[in-house]
Image (cartoon, rainbow, N blue to C red; front, side):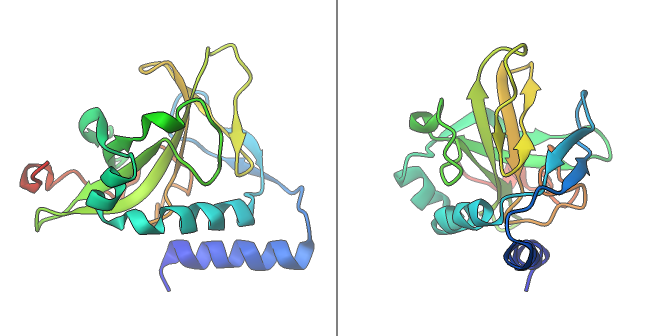
Length: 182
């Protein structure tokens, strides 16, 4: 069983044993404005998200379902030592919604064979930095000043040593971005 799947299984087990949880945890984000206090993640919502995105390991299937535009264009590279994100594909029909099973962006890592591997998702929500931060999975979004949106990453399909909700993933690389035919 992969690390992320083990972590989700442990969350479900703990949630089932403890009932509804209000445990406080510290989440360290990889952006200005960290750290923040957050509730324990909603295990049922995370499993619903994993189930909802399981069919999009194929980029062609994701494109057919509406995640058909790169946004932003190119493989998103992080600061030195932080890791990368990968290619983001947006489904414009989901922007402005906060459905935990319908992310606005699917994130793919380029592979040496020219393929793309689904590694995570990103939720974005339009708004001003003075608006209250949206929240999903017991996590508050952070404000992305570059794109003027609230954002939350969830690394469902690739373990992230920096955390399930961190912006950058040291286990993801844009090394093979030139091998991908888009």
